[in-house]
Image (tube, rainbow, N blue to C red; front, side):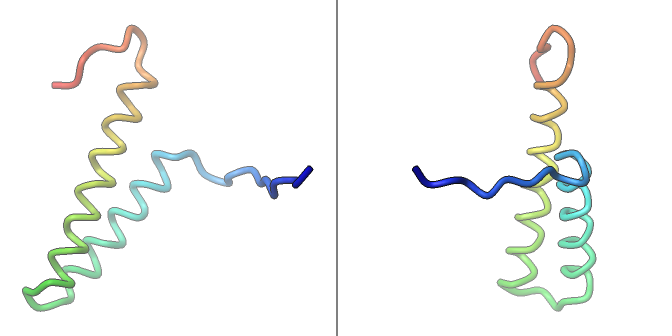
Length: 66
């Protein structure tokens, strides 16, 4: 049987997503308009959406997102 390498995350998922979104937005801010900048902004939005979904899943009663 193959053993999986496991490790415990130092930060919760929402913090890692927030850090990554911030990093992407900062890098995009330093670039001129173009494909690379658009890709970074898209990834930042995806991280922010993932944070909202994760918050919704952790909420009591699983209220639908607004």
